[in-house]
Length: 183
Image 1 (cartoon, rainbow, N blue to C red):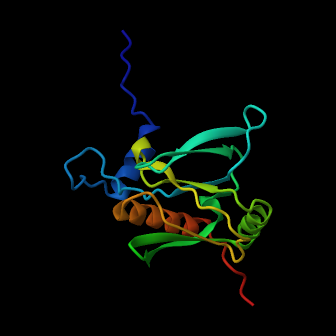
Image 2 (cartoon, rainbow, N blue to C red; image 1 turned 135 degrees about the vertical axis):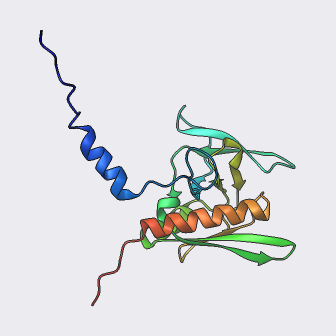
């Protein structure tokens, strides 16, 4: 009679050693996994467009209290990847949001605003991982060329929502920042 001695799984040994060395600890919150909530700051800026070929435009609704329908180009002109900074500003009767863009995106904003006076920019923002945490925030009218790479607007949102969004945009800007070469 042949008896096989049970063999130790050699693939298990490195995993077990890694777990022992890394010092597995029980989570503090009592849940199986304990994750720090990730800040989200999504930005999409579109320009108003006339009706044209199907698939190149869409109709959106801006402002919750008195909705306004706006036809926009589906092409995004600016995103959170273009942001270098964002902040809340105090404004008469409330607050405003100021978003600063990197140089090339700032030039893009300047070009689109120069060739589209009298139209609107449609600004979409998302600050959480739920669909309810995002919506069309504003549609400022383009009255002149927007030089300097700064877009400031009054959002249709609460201060708490915009604080979360600005923090998310700022985190995205830090993550996308390219270190400057030392001279």
